[in-house]
Image (tube, rainbow, N blue to C red):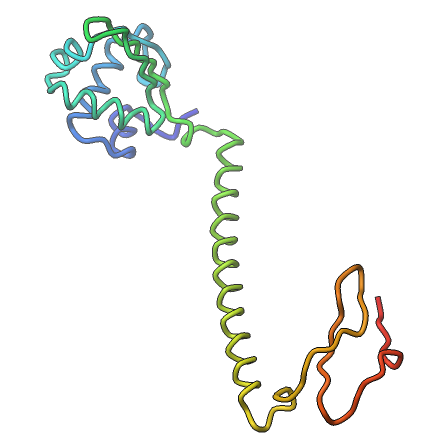
Length: 179
């Protein structure tokens, strides 16, 4: 079920401040079910929760944001400041559960990193190729300096070019294309 042995261990792992942790402890204490990792809900105003947890209203707001981001709670705001908020305590966040979607997410993250690295390598190769072409065009020893591209046919709708220089003209009938 959970790799955490206690609520304290989960809070430490998920990185809440002491104020965030006080708010979460109070939510767990007040929810309508028993157990640190058992989902449940409470209805309470910011002001009442702040008073019970011994923190400021701002700390309650920041705690809600932090614990919602971590997937531990979901907050449904009341209609106005005087109406209670409904706080659904989810228990252990989804990242810690043995969830097949989390495996897919980690694989996706790894593929994203690899795609980024591949993209960077392609850009580097393009720069190197441009440098080589420029160097060949300006070298007095290059066979390609005076060459010009000549279309000799097409393959699957794409033109095929060769470089023709001043030394000898190439007859397109002499060129065979292998598929």
